[in-house]
Image (tube, rainbow, N blue to C red):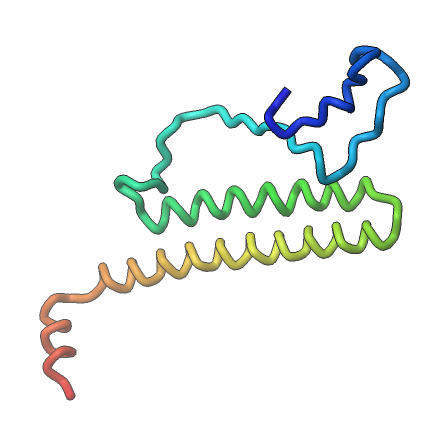
Length: 127
């Protein structure tokens, strides 16, 4: 059991296979989340780059949009379904905006790389 798990769900006297267990209140059960993979990201405390951080954000927002759209498809109660659809829509919008931010960084870097140093001196001297 995780530190936030509700032991009443497992049926304290009868055991986990019992059919007579207390229902889990929605706000009392918080399962532990375990992530696997390389512990060092290119978007971390050391050697972080804006492009790498945006790439991580793009992947996270893509997954959020994908799974919230699946969630909206699984819900039948209309009021709850509307909230899930709104969550999917906002996640998709965040995915689009973060992708646009990465494209803007690429555009600015290309513009900076295309500038001739003599033009920079001229631009700095112009009023």
